[in-house]
Each structure stands twice: as C-alpha cells, then as structure tokens.
Length: 143
Image (cartoon, rainbow, N blue to C red):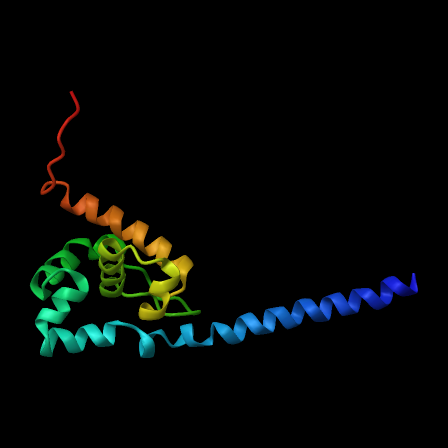
C-alpha cells in the first residue's frame, strides 16, 4: 500500500512536467500576428508583385477576387479565448499548400498556425473554393 502511495505522486509529477514542456513549445503560436506570413505578403503585394504571385501562384487582383467570393464561407468569429484566423490568411495558407504539397507541420512555421488547424482550414477553404467556383469548373461526365 505504501509503495502505491509513493508511486502515484511521482507519476503525477512526471505527467505535469510533460504538460509544462508542451505549453512552452506552443508559446510562439500565440503570437500569430507577429510571426505570420501575412506580414510578408503585405510587403510583397506593395513592393514585389512578382514575388507575391510566385508565393501564392496567383496575382494580387485574382487573390482579392477569390477572397471576396469565398469570405462568407470561411469567415469565423472571434472568441473570448482568441481571435479568429482571418479569411485572407485562410486562403493564403491553402493556396500555399495546394501547389507545394508541404506538410502541415512545415506550413506551421510560415503561418504560425498549428498543424491541426491548418488541416481544418485547408479542407474548409477547398470546400468553399469548389462551391464558389463550380460554375467556372467543367468536369467531363463519365460515359
């Protein structure tokens, strides 16, 4: 009985120590506005349009048109816990993912968004793109 009483607090201490490490590692993700690629895109849009297009595979005008079309479908509300990821950032991370095929873990470092959230964002944004562009996309019917 005494052994169990000694082991249980040790196991709890190890568990709590692991939790502390995870919290420290994720601190930089809380500063999304500071570390996001959106700051780079704002600069490229104004000073280097060709690099903006190279980064997203889309010129600024087309990006704005596409954003306007899908914003109602991908826009989220801010909560008391955190600000929502804006539609422009949702679209840009999706447009970055589609041609490159980078892993969500890799995209985490350019977007300052967790890989789990990126996975959800990409799926929601692709669904919005398909729905918004369905009149522009022709699919050959199977015979």
